Amino acid sequence: MTGRPGSTGRTGRGGGQASAGELLELVRSGRAVTRGALQRTTGLSRATVGHRLDRLFRAGWLREGAGGPVDSPLGGRPSITLEFDDSHAVVLAADLETRHARAAVLSLTGEILAEHSGTLVIQDGPDAVLGELGRWFAELLEKAGHRAAEVCGVGLAVPGPVDTETGRVFQPPIMPGWDGYDIRGRMARAFTEHTGAPPVPVLVDNDANLMAYGEQRAGHPDCSAFVLVKVSTGIGAGVVVDGSIYRGIDGGAGDIGHIRVGAEAQCRCGSYGCLAAVASGGAVARKLAESGVPAASGSDVRDLLASGHPEAAAVAREAGRMVGDVLATVVTLLNPGVLMIAGDLAGTPFLTGVRELLYQRALPRSTAHLDVVTSRLGERAGLIGAGALVVEHLYAPERVEERLLALGV
Ligand SMILES: [Zn+2]
Image (cartoon, rainbow, N blue to C red):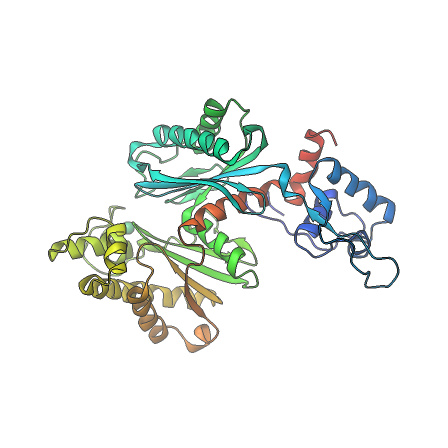
């Protein structure tokens, strides 16, 4: 089990030593939701299970299920079901894009309670952007009717490579001024400045990672190898394996936008011929603008595609073929069950292009059971993933004991 944020450390049978955190995990995952099932699963005595559950009840983290008692599988008296009580706290989450952000108050089970989206320009730098986000969060809490003291943590999705140990981005091509900046510290300060509440934990991760996490949990919970590719200003992929984000050793896993595809265009990272330089939303907008179609950004391309613009569709399809070529390698390496295409270009023409090259280049064995799909959560995927990351981090078995002690239970 690692201490990395977001690693959920799913714990199986406790061998008689299961902690309160492990019991909570069993209830939250639905694997054991009665006292009897918890005893059988963990090997703990009835008294020990009772004592550990009492602490979780006193913390307000567990409640008796609304569904009432269920029949015990072993016969005898019906058992009371237990469930995670998501009413004791809320989470704040934000998804930052280059010129736009979306922020929300979420319940611990991922329901959006209040939401705001608007202009927030990454280029203005982290101090200004995170300060403004603090103000948004204060307003959203008021709108949702929740106090700042109920906030257990903040999750941020950012369009760059993140070292999740420190929450800092490193050499982010589309986040000038953010390299190495203490995002967590500034966000925690902005939260306190605008709400008056003490600082809360802040977790930061890459947007494609969090979109993948949100989408996998919401729509494909049984898929053990899930890949999401976000094609907007840049191109990035998120990989979820066995329910956890796979980040690689340095947080660089999935950063496919800067794979050289041999073209001549200069990329925002400084190199030439990157995939993002020829097939991102920004690249498609540039190509269209060169031939006289008014498009300045990925979101302009999105609007053109939505209106059925034929030239935009042709350029998007060609971009899809270039991405599909790279994804053939991705799919061969990971053999995922689901490949989700998200972002500004995610629509029929782009997807057609992806499929053309993907099925042509990847081995049939890697694509036989592959579903190529579009987003289910749409523009909220990153937000929902960021909220889930915070919850899974704070309620992971290895963190529960410390938090219960801090609550005095
Ligand atoms: Zn590049």
